[in-house]
Image (cartoon, rainbow, N blue to C red; front, side, top):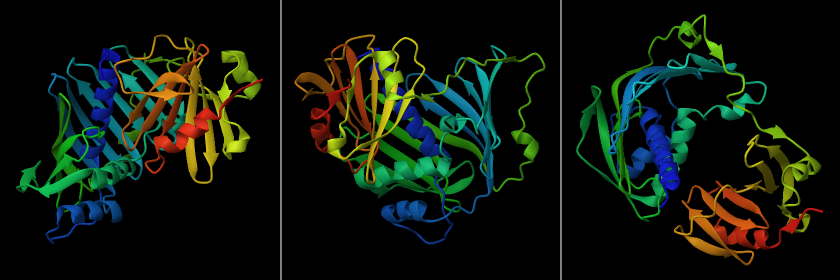
Length: 353
């Protein structure tokens, strides 16, 4: 990406991908030697025997950014403590009912009831995230086996994954997988000029973790920030028009059904999000007032007679364009749906009346 904002976005994507891979690859242990594909298949197909674990890990980027973390996970509950390269300390706890995050420097906390719409803010389980990444690597990378190494005191398989396409979301990777638990203990991801190294320095599988670890130990004088996160709220078509005026929607004649419209509570842009479904296919459409022009340095294509841009990362696709003062983002996270399939739907879109 040419802009600073674009670079930061890609950094977050690569950071997230590295974190996902470092934290989880679960499956049944085996003493049998595997081929690269068999290692991935085992991780994708087997059910984890890990009921809990404690880990200490670090994430280092070649731009000097470093994050150190500790994580406890047990039966779906988790606690993550983080210290970044500036010394900022924070923690987040999900006890299955409540999500609590705390930042030490500001002595502020955010507490969300997961039964009141907050579940949308909870990340998928580490295994769920890892499975998606592994599915992508399985098809998009050429994978070979490197020399076995010990990581955090555990014997590992060393996989070397070379991206077949330079546009691949995850770039070239190296992954070290624990031979007993199938947990990924280290990964190195390179995309463009950015390299991210993520590594467990301590890993205790099936650790004996007391449930008190998942109780938020907040200071007595903590400030509860009730306005820090404004959750999306479902609204009607009429309410959406009040926010952004007349806007483009997908007509019913396409076979797609409008399942939901949400107010994203973005004060500056008034963003709304629409979810469309047809059979097993789904895509999202966001509509908002743009704060800046489209980046002309990124890959472009013609959308509804105007210059738009496209981002195709295989597991995530974005089509973006401006029309009559509004910006439209069509987002696809289904790798089986192509840009070519969605463009004709976009051409049929009509303004609300």
